[in-house]
Length: 309
Length: 264
Image (cartoon, rainbow over all chains, first blue to last red; front, side, top):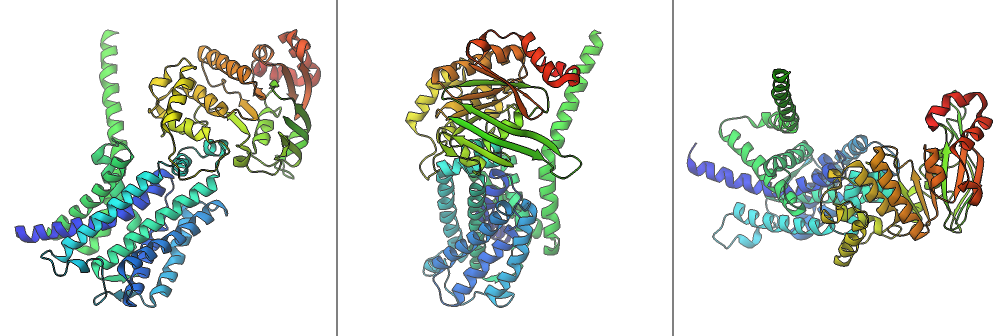
């Protein structure tokens, strides 16, 4: 492995991390703020890619394409929220229903299982006459979009409605007691979440040059990985904006780790297993560390009292 | 202010676990009434509170708050009129959010949640003053997460949140039962100050008979889903715990022995 190829790989990983971080920010809304594991994500990510691809191959504007992807994701999220609240279907099941339904819908949108985006317009067209590469241009586009999304989320969750959504994940009973419709806050949460997930799907489809009906598989786990890696690194410190930033950093680090293990010769077929293991470990480690600490403290203090007895 | 007309509730209708929790309850609270409610376990005290708050639907009858018939309204709609403090200190606050954010949410009771900023500068100053009245030092910890507070502090904060908008009805469901005696006394003192100074129409469930006699202007005893004793004014002031026990014995007969302990 040469240094240049590694650097190139890292640049690509950084780019992917940025574009996928929008998805992770969406997952954060349901997973951490609403305290729901929303599995719609695997479907809505591909929906974003599908909508974006169809618009692009029909000669559409790339900005319109990703905004349409965002809207399509919002609709998917709304359906999950509706199933969850008005139909009282448990969160996991509501998400699975949407996800499985979206698979067919995504195929309908695309008309086939894969759409290549080779001769279409893209978000990085402005850079063709400049001296930077497409990847670098894509990074710039990604960074701008992620910053806009972060500012938007920071503002939204500071508003009255946003605060009510945060509180819903914390203590639903209390939110209803102060006169807020928790069905509504949950629906807004899942809608917004899947909108961001689909936006990310659209961005990724443009960057990788195709949309595929299977592109969303495992994205919920990648989202969780980004959140958990960010939380471990930042140790849950800082205000809400720092928290959002930690997720973006988590997403980038996840991609860099993947790039490094691929460079070291790991097969892409084994990637999903690796991701599952990484997330499993990251979620479990805090628990084991606490247990060990408590055990050590018990042994220390007990040996002292036993000595004095 | 609060009218309850012919309200009944039966849980698990038609099954072997059928339980008539409320039997044709009729009750009218005047503006500013402070009612204490006592009764053994399973008497229907908490069920009555939950029916008023809209946690479960009632089987029949009417609940009218300040002229609005809320019998079929959802819990959150009734939240516009009703302030509540629960037995469990964890229930009344959002633990991951700051003290000031919790208050700001309660301050918007009954209002539509808009895209305006969740808390203003003026509000923060107001909450600081309000928290200072508790005498718990919480005014210095406005941005601390509520999860860091003790049970007593959380109940005091919940009390502020329940009353900051001067609700039409305040429901206190054994809100000091989970606290140690000293903290319980303190929260009770704060409760009495807020309720009397704001002249809030209040219903307070308690297991402590002396407390039920000392606080408020009216006392209700429940048994087996019914109101069996309703006393106010001078007659209430002259009550003794022994009188209440006797009343309870008359109503419950043989079950008295079992429930006496629970009533203290």
